[in-house]
Amino acid sequence: MSTSLVVKVTAGADAPERCAQAFTVAATALAAGAPVSLWLTGEASWFALPGRADSFDLPHSAPLKDLLAAVLAGGTITLCTQCAARRGLAGDDVIEGIRIAGAAVFVEECLAEGAQALVY
Image (cartoon, rainbow, N blue to C red; front, side, top):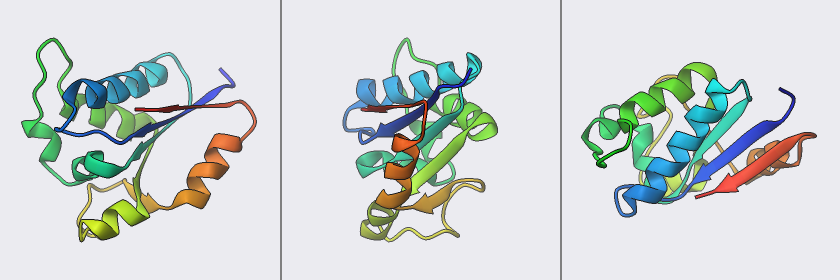
């Protein structure tokens, strides 16, 4: 599959359905063979921290910790630079394998040939 998917999730526990949809779409695209880049922004930034996805619960949804693990294993997860700074988060705070990057990298990924972007 040549199309890559960039998913930006802005919602966290404040909007659980929107949050779970973003993680579900990202994990499903990976399972279908698409390269996936998941961006954690806004309230979703907290899920870059170890253990935070464990307490997320939404009936009839796959566990967020499992979706996060699937995307981390097969795709790229990025924590927004500004969102991290606003929350006092640094590289040493986040789950191993999650990078911190800014808007220039996000735009580069979205403009790459064959890329599709979704925002939740």
